[in-house]
Structure formats: C-alpha cells, structure tokens
Length: 300
Length: 212
Image 1 (cartoon, chains in turn purple, brown):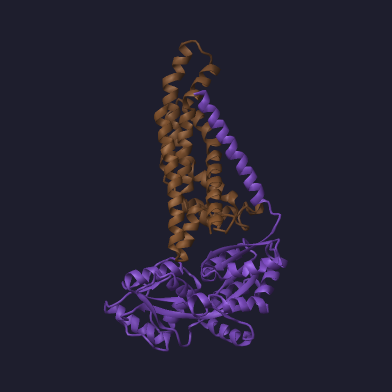
Image 2 (image 1 turned 60 degrees about the vertical axis):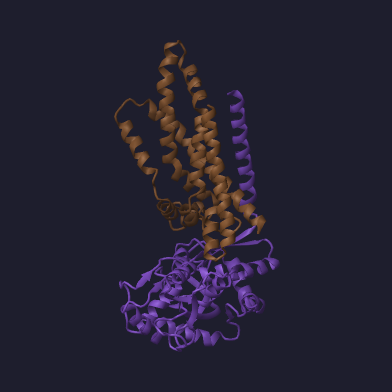
C-alpha cells in the first residue's frame, strides 16, 4: 500500500511538472501571435498553411493561428473581437460587417469558381449547361418528381449564401421540401453526403478537387462550371483596431505578404501539380475587374 | 507528419490530465463535505450531479465561448483559443462524473470505517487517515475514468480551443479536421492512438481495482 502511495505521488508530480514545463514552452507568447478566422476552403486545401509557412521564412518570430470555420462564423468571431484578421468569401455578408464597422482594409486576394456537382448518371440532365440558374430549375423539377436529391450546406457559409442567392435568382424556394436536405456541416462532409446519397450540391472547386484527389468522391462529377453567378471571390480583412484590441501591424504585414507578387504567385500555383489544375487564381492585376464582380454579388 | 502526431498526442494527454487534476482539486473536498451532511438535501444534490454527467459537451463549449470571448464578461483574460480554456472546460465537463463516482467511494469507506474506527478508540485525525488510505487507490481509478471522458470529448476543444495547429489541436479536433480534409488515413491513425490511450487507461483502472 505504501509503495503504491509512493508511485501515485511520483506520477502526480511528474504530470504536474511536465505540464508546467510544457505550458511554459508553448504557452508563453515569446512569439508574436496573429489570430485569423477563415473559411474552411482556404484552410482545408492547405493554401493558408502554405502562405503562413512562406511568410514565416521572412518573419520567423511570428506565429499565425488559423481558426477554420464557415464564412458566417468566421465573421461572427471577428465581430466579437476574438481574432485579428479574417479570410472569407461571401460579399453580401462581408458588406454587412463592413457597414457595422467590424472590418477594415479589405482586399480581394483570390478567386475561383463554384461548381454544381452531382451523380455521374445526372438524373436532372444538367451536364454541360452554361447557366447555373437553369441547372437549378432542372434539379428542382427532378427533385419534385422524386428523381433526385439536393444537399445544401445550411450553415450560413459563403457557399450556402451563394446557393440561396442562385435559388432566388431562379425564382424558386426549395427549403422545406423532401428532396432538399440541409446538412448543416462543412463543404467536405456535404460533398461526402452527396456522394453517398447520389445527390447534387454546390461546391467551391478547391474543396471538390482536394477531396476528389483523395479518391473519396467516386460517384460525383462536375456537371456545371460555367455561367454567370459562379465566380467565387475570396477577400481578406483586418478587424477594426479602433473597436477591438487587434494586432494591427502584424495583420497588415501578413495581408501585404498575401497581396505581394510572391504571395499571389503561391496562390496561383498552389495545387497545380497535385490536382492537374489550380485550386485558386490570383487576384493580381485583376483587382478592378474582380471588384466590379464583387459589387454585383451584393445585390443578392 | 509524425512529429505533428506526437505533438497532438502529448498535448491531448497533458490538457486532459491537467483538467482531471483540476476537477479532483475541487471535487474531493466537496464530496467529503457532502458525505458528512445528515440531511435529505444530500440526495437531491448528488441526484443533480448524477444527472449532469450527461451534460452536452457543446453546451459547455458554447457557454465558455460566450464567457471568454473578447466581448464577454471574462474577455479581458484573453484565454479564448488557448489550451487553458480547454482545460477549464474539460474540468467543468467531468466534475459531475468525478463527484458522482467519488460519492460512491467515499460513502462506502465512510460507512465501513468511520464509526468503526471511532468505536475502536481512534481519534478523528486517525479515522481520517484510515479512510484516506482506504480510498486513495479508488480515487486514482476515478481519475482514470474521468480522464478518458475528458480526452475523448470534442465539443469543448473545438469551440473554445479553435483547433489551432501546434497549440490547441488535440486528438478529437485533429480527427475531425483530417476527415474534413478527406485524409482518412491520418484520421484513422489518430483515432487508433486515441483508442489505445483510452483502452490502456481503462485497463489500468480495472487492474488497480482488482488488486485492492
């Protein structure tokens, strides 16, 4: 019994000491920390980690901490003052937070496209259409007649907001119908559900290609990737330093790096080798054109 | 990749064991006090803790998030998205379990030894010593069981930890992310590691229980 007591005391001491040591090593902010909330697509594809890695080569004493959530939550977190910076892709939502004074220094950093993906046998017959609104109308009709399903993110993310805007544009309201399933999860899980249930969904091309590359979306393919309303614009903002305690200088430094020729080149080339095509396109030199498109997306 | 998995494992173990120790710190005196109450309210109190064992992890996470957010009442502490909030959250989460289990242990020991020791002529201090000696291994078992609940939870770690790489990423949040990335192999490795940890903890608890 005494022996056991000794062992116990030793164990507890070891745990405590290691914890203290560990926490003092990792917990002490000897490094400068930049907190960033971001849409999942930029993180899950690995792009942001890559940018941070390159950034740290120039500024080794900076640590960038990413909190990957949907655009809706990323902005909500920012409006509570819990991060220094955001990366998001829902212009109409961003606009609200800019007006509320949550965000400053907005810049478009990249773009790509949304795609409508669905089962290979394509029961709604949308393959090759160059109009997403028309495609959604066909999916709607096929859904109503019980031939197919549509999986919606249902989580106030950038992709979800765009999907709803496209339905509105089509003059249809599928919410509440049997064939319209709100998954309430991130893009990856929504794609996996669509794959399992042989359903249609709207996805950003980056996440789709990443998962396709992992070989787990065997039943899905891209059916519509052209047409108005599919451009997907990613922007970065700094959280307003006049309203919150924000690491403004550091955020500015990282933003400038992302917008620099080097940062933009990383974005443009990311995943090109691995997936055969780029996941994102740089905004470099196309700022005005993209800004105009960004403005048209506010009307939704 | 392996150094990262090693870091995740170490971090998980440290965060959850600290949370368990913390929960024990307030649960042991509380339960000891509770045992000595000779009133019906004792049953009600322990009944409440029994019920709270099923406290949803996401609810604890959400409440802590609102408390520790910069705009919340404890925002000035700047603890959100740090390992410390995960420790606090997990310790709160497992407290009902710790108290419920300790209550069983303590009341058994109390009924068996307290009056006996006193009638045999021991003074109160000696009686306390006796009881402590009797229950110490059981306390260890209780902490192992509670630890396995803490290390396996996802809600708190994800909401107040934020799953930050190299800082607040633990077993469960890492598994969730790897699934999100579609990298199932890493998810399975992490899942198996977590399972091995929990399994060996529970086995250790059983062995100790049998030996005593």
